[in-house]
Structure formats: structure tokens, C-alpha cells
Length: 324
Ligand SMILES: C[S@@+](CC[C@H](N)C(=O)[O-])C[C@H]1O[C@@H](n2cnc3c(N)ncnc32)[C@H](O)[C@@H]1O
Picture 1: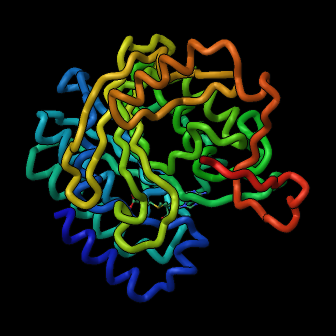
Picture 2: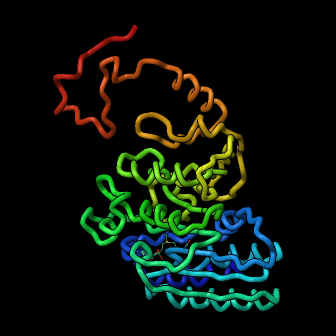
Picture 3: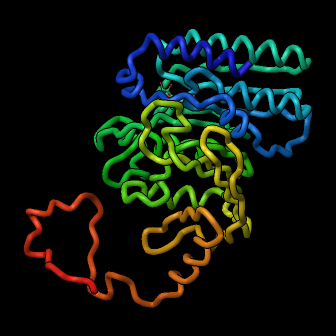
């Protein structure tokens, strides 16, 4: 079924210019990745109504994947809210909604579906959710945009819609609710995500992190340049001692390497409260060594700037030196 949703999505992609999709922050989650994200742990009683939220639903592939998973696990009462502002993707979303109804019927499960055509960041929900699953739009917005103004508690410098989605989704989750987000990695250390990052780390018990080595591979030829991650968490301020990290080989989703990191080794690190993303156990050893260092580059008089060096503007700082 996910393949059919992909097929209709590809038809939409073929008739909608990449530039236009980019302006809407539209990058669609492949079927395999959707299934992986949908495998959220859910330990609710099987006869309980489960409320699922899918902000930036697009073609609805994440909703379908999670409903399919919940039905297979024996849940019988599902309430799904899909929020999407783009009307052009609507025919695909409507198709997916029909298929969600059908699959629920085939499992004799009760299901209510709410399609909301509103800006998620501004939307006021009347309830909290058990599961939020999301691939948010990746787009910078102006500091004086309606979204940034509405979420100013999370804005620091240049806001990005994806960070605002991440924060709003946590707000709408009930205690112990499940949180799955696929995003770029920039929120874990970027200066402009400082407020989002500290909110997420405080409010989420982070359980697992998937790291893809290149985002371009995940989003199949969409030329998305940033590296991607999936964050699996649970709403609550008590953090598990360990966080599982999976390094996924792009394309195949093979877990090339999985290991556990102590939460206090990687969460809230340094003055900028980074979430560190080690890619192997050796990185963990390096984190330990670095954490025990008493001096920093800064305290030793070195200052860094990232980005390309424009040599002719820095001639006074460049010295010829021969290494023997
Ligand atoms: C990255 S796509 C993800 C689509 C789909 N959920 C998936 O996983 O393939 C993000 C979606 O969010 C929608 N979107 C952008 N801004 C939005 C907003 N402010 N509120 C709700 N949806 C929005 C876009 O139109 C796009 O379909």
C-alpha cells in the first residue's frame, strides 16, 4: 500500500516543479523509512482510543504506516489528525485517507479521521495526542513571520519552520506520548536552534536516534544537502540512562552499526547544550576525553569561524611555514 501512495506521490512530483515543492518545504518520506518510523513502541491498553497526530501530512504516508502498525499490534480504536496546508497534494492525501478507512474496516477497528487544512504552527488543538509522527517542512521563515511570532518562546536568530514544528508537537503530546520526527541534524547543535534544542531535551525522554549518512540518499534525488536523523522519544522529563544510536546505511536502511550512549554523555553538552551525535563507540571515547579537558581552544586564545576562508582578505593572518 505504501508503494501505491509513493506511486501517486511520484505523479504529483512529476507535475510539480522541484522549486515549487521546495518553497512548500515538501520532501516525501520513502516507504521504507515511513515503516521504520511507524514502529514506535506503544504500550497503551489495546481497547483505548489512540490519538495520532501527523503535522505536515503531505501525502499521508506516515499516518498510513503508523495506523497499519497499530492495527497489526491489535489496537481497535484509532483517531488520526492530519494537518496539511497545500491543496495540490490533497488528491493524494484523500486517497491515503480512504485507504486508512478501508484498512481499519478490514481489522474491524473504529477509526475517526480529521483532516485540518490549517497552518500547524498557528493551529489550536482541543486535545493532546498519544503519538506524533512527522516529517516537517524544512524552510527558513522570517523572524517577524506569523509562525515565528506565534512561537517566539522558541525563536533565537533565524527561525526554521522545522524547529517550530518540533517544539509545537512536543507541546501537543500527552505525558508519556510517543514522538517520532525525521529532520536535518542542524537542530542538535545549530546556534539558531538553541531554544528549541533546550526545550526538546528537557521535555523528551530520548530513547533512540537513527543517523543517516547523507540526506540526499534518504530523500531520493531531491538534492537535500543536510544530513538527516530520526528522533524517537517519549514526553517526560525523566531521561532513560541510555540512548540507542543506529547508523543506517542509506538506501538499504541496514543498521550498519548500533550502540548505546549514556544519556549524560550526549545530552545537554557544553554551554550551548548540544545534543551530541556520535557515529561509533570510538566517538564516545573521544567525547569522554573532551569532556574531561579543563582548557578549551577559546581559553587558550584560539578563535574559530566555520565557512570557507577567503584567502586574499586574510593575508595578514596567513604565514608561510614549512613542516619538516
Ligand atoms: C517534508 S513534507 C512531509 C510530507 C509527508 N508527511 C511525508 O512524510 O512525506 C512537509 C509537508 O508540510 C506541509 N506544510 C508546510 N508548511 C506547513 C504548515 N505551516 N502547516 C501545515 N503543513 C505545512 C507541506 O506542504 C508538506 O506537504
